Length: 347
Ligand code: 1HN
Image (cartoon, rainbow, N blue to C red; front, top):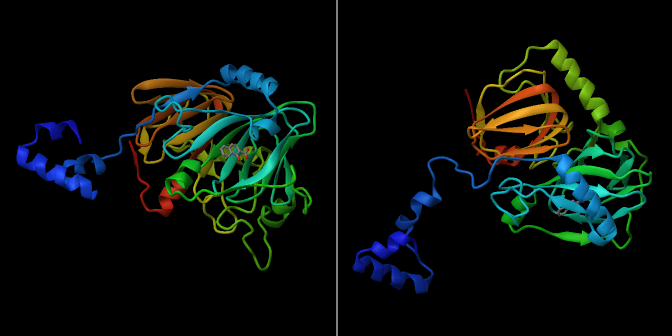
């Protein structure tokens, strides 16, 4: 019972006490908390410094193997919820490390995952029988229930940011996971196959959707996305809220690349400051180039290369680039749009 319940008239208290053994409760005592007038996030805005995290990630690299860990990751814990393994209300994020010669063994799960590659060109991930090599800035997708393993055959450690929708899946109590008998999956397609088939503005005559609602392109390479963004930035007016932004698109339906997670890439020229906006999706930002200052909740958060920033749902935010910046953002907006609950406001 709430503390208010202790001030209740005895008749009401007696009534509530008689309800409880029947697993019944009076809605009018809790209604305001159940249906707030607007979102009030329990999470905090925060920036994780890669310079601080990297030495500790490398320490983890000496402490245990990727195989032992299954996934060797330092979780980005929202400081408002330590131990929650949450970066926002619905999303998990972490810095993952693969050391030279290691394999993170094949498994699959209901949660969808994305990777934003930071360091160690040459690592690979395999999804549904196809391998893709990772380079900094690549946005790589592991579809729901798709087998995936990662490895590094070259001499440098590989580091990336993971984002998973696992708290959405767990909220629905719909999560499954399997491990493969073999550490690595058998490759059945040549590298680059999915991009040839779906990623050149062309597609099969009878398109099938290999990953359901998830894009059949599972590596949106920086080698393609950066020049596209830069050309758009150099030849079109800047949006006061979005700066120059391109979103990652599923070529089969024109929607978001992932069914639950929205992803986009933004260029902010040095000195540019966005106007304030707020939206119902908690957003997580990976800085790929330059440096940004985010003003959220009257505080300023600075994020440089490979740092990760998060802004909770419905916080007014504006961004300024202290250096020419390219940032990758992910959020649960794709899921919210499907559920018709997404909202935003712009000043
Ligand atoms: C997972 O499968 C990966 O495949 C990374 O790299 C992080 C966190 C929780 C559950 C599954 C990966 C994960 C994860």
